[in-house]
Image (cartoon, rainbow, N blue to C red; front, side, top):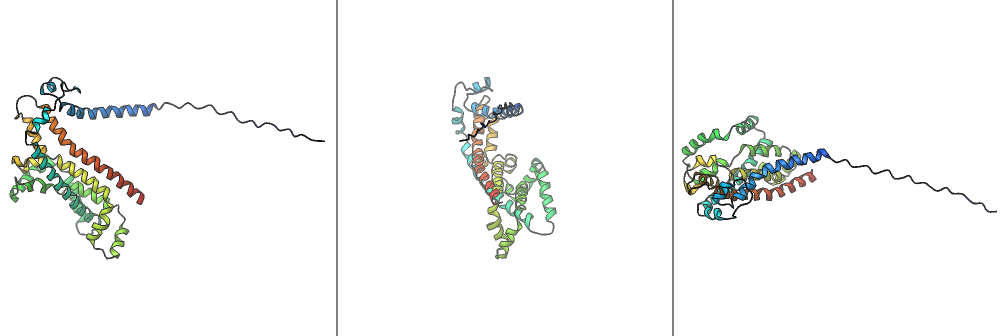
Length: 295
């Protein structure tokens, strides 16, 4: 006699109906607003690029058009008939010297204010912050008087020497050095390293993100500087790009609005700053990620 076992089939639950994904209306509106702001921000730059390839008559009749009619590079040819190459050379060496000076001196000052204990340190840092609050235009006449009394007015030294120290750079470096653990410096001090050796060999390599940030800001500020160069010299051989391009708007190169000429000069003047920013931005992101992993 054999017995059979009845097995009841296992019922699997029916799959739940798929939920409808709601359309993210808020996110869509946010992107619309961002795109609108991007267009408003980029449109003048596009006008600058396009106008550089227009003729004077086309730039006058259709100033906001993004289609040059006809396309011409005559403005760039006329531009290099001026002293544009000399202005560019002066801007390069001034910006390089100012950037190197600011990175070195602001790092030294920032480390001293962050780590060294001396009388009047708080008052000195307060004075640095006060300098940041003073509009630079207020200091133009005192700057001219100082340059004249030192006997360096209208000389190459006057173009870069007053710019090699910057209160904002000191503030940036001080805030970064205060975030470095003091135990690292104590370990180096136990090994016999002096104050400058600790700064140069231990702390400064850790400050690469702050150094690159300061490099970008210093190069951009010195490259775009105009008021200081106006009061520092009057010799045409010492004109930088900002001062030289400003003279192109005075109508001294002929009749007409000269929009293609001036905007072409401004376009070429913008390229070095953009290149420096994008190149150093990559190293800045890499340095920040490296610092986050080490932390």
